[in-house]
Length: 255
Picture 1 (cartoon, rainbow, N blue to C red):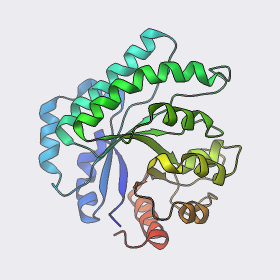
Picture 2: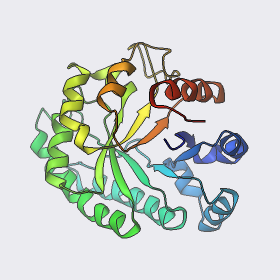
Picture 3: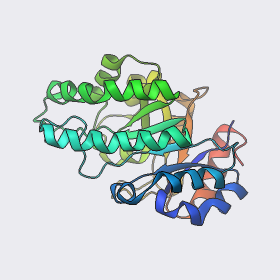
Picture 4: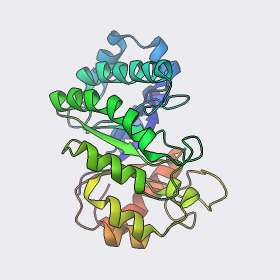
């Protein structure tokens, strides 16, 4: 079992490098739009030099205000511009996965999955080819989805070995209206990453594993033997270490 990844915003990674190295964690670097506005490639080269060569990196792309399935061409153009910038950084740091949000909200699209899907495919197919050239997988994360149909349809239409799902258990716990087993039955073949955090269904609290009411027993029972990245998404070093300890109880040696 490889060491887990841990979510860390780009602007904070310098302060957490020693913690990451000391605890044999692998960073999932989140590039928000504000960071992308000020990043230069010299700083990315410097970051690469600071990170150990044996670390396994992943990225989380920006998502605020972005919409990969946007009907408005200018909104989608701005979204693609942001995503392409992340790929420019990926050419230097070479992450294993890049996580993107799906952008699907059923009420915004008037329950018309096909409308969202058509524009999403126009966005993702060129990005998938960029990822393939770099040896990277794209992972689409569930956010406001209350059931998995739109994500499964996207996977079936993309039909690609480097385009999969990042299943976020906290978002599932907060928004889902169907059982966990139904999600995993639909999406397990496509899952390349898990985002691991917990909540009590009141808000997206990003608590440590086991500090909320998500059913981790069922998750890890069904996912047993699946080759994917395990990413801890807590907002404090203490929460990360607590989650890592509990993750070890489920899947073996972690730290």
